[in-house]
Amino acid sequence: MAKVLFCTNIIPPYRTTFYEKLSACDGVNLTVAHYKKRLEDGRPAAEGNLNFNTKRICEKSIRIGPYQLLWQKGLIGEFLCGKYDTVVVSGTIGNVSVWILLVLAKITKVKTLMWACGWESKREGSLALKVKKLFYRLFFSLPDKILTYSKKANNYLNGLGVDRRNLFTCFNGIEIDNLLKEEEKIKFQADSLRKSILSSDGTIFLYVGAMLLEKRIDLLIESFSSVRGKYENAYLWIIGDGPDLNHFKEIAEQHRNIKFFGRIVDGVDPYFCAADFFVLPGIGGLALNQALFWRTPCIVSVADGTEDDLVYHEETGFRFISGSVDSLEECLFSAINSSRAKREELGNMGREIIVKRSNVDIMVKIFHYHLLKGS
Image 1 (cartoon, rainbow, N blue to C red):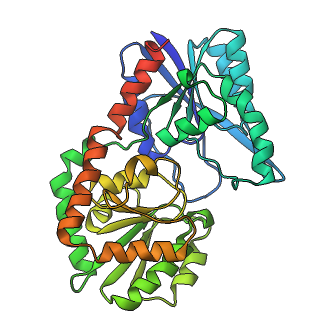
Image 2 (cartoon, helix red, strand yellow; image 1 turned 180 degrees about the vertical axis):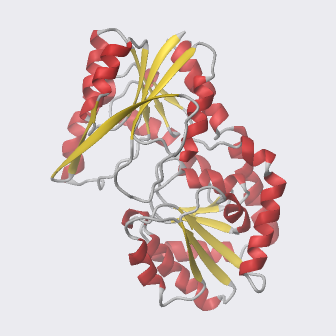
Image 3 (cartoon, rainbow, N blue to C red; image 1 turned 90 degrees about the vertical axis):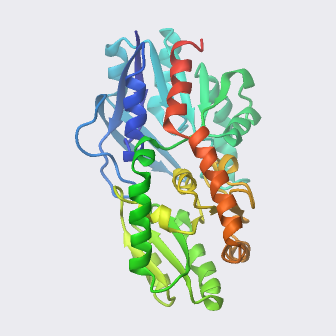
């Protein structure tokens, strides 16, 4: 039985079944170290009892110029006292606790696995990123293996000097068990939802995510206004909460057919199913998976890297140039002018990717293998 310490920040609702299923795997004794959320940033944390072992830690942060350093109080003590065989950490270079944990693991010969998104918040070519990259080679050389969210992340880390033999792709995915069981019920709810809001037939564009400036919802609203100017039956639904919600509402006040629903966690799937297209104007990721499961084609530019494995232009959706209003407008017009047959083709191909590859069950299988048999 491998005793595994899985270190993370918060446990979001969409990640609970991943930990449940991983902890139920043969040969795995899992403990998830996480902290309780203190500040509202539009990203909800799981509430209530969790069906796996957890260890509560405290996270403190300090900002130094463009960099944020993290310290997870109690994490090092848990590692030293817990006598773990394997440690899983996130690929957050600014987390001082992770640096120390990886060094201690090497000294004590504890197996280490890193889970890395490969997405960088710093602007490419900026001095802040250049300085940060000076530490990348050392940081990513510390774990025994790295599992990346996407092929793009895999190639990115390899370009930073990480040995390809230590890199493996574990496509980030959603839980689909309950969605498959409740599919017909959710489709009925989606149909009722659509009819209750639309007085006539129309095209619904959907955004679901945190209300943060970096999500570029302002870009979506501006682009949608051009579409709405030519198509009266175009609608934009926006779901989510966060510190910049009022800012986006103010921008949308002068435009028609834009509706804010606030935060919806349980019960959001009928909205994905009811929409014609899902739009991710800025950073993000898993919402693409959820949309594609419901055969809702996606419109995206540069998100968290997973978009390159999910959204293929005119195959499962449309791709636009990051930050470009004109490019996003072009995609919105292409979407609204696409035939019903084309929309079904896009949706069916997207659904296949999620069911066959990008879901929690596949993630668990890959983690299980590398935790126990991938030495």
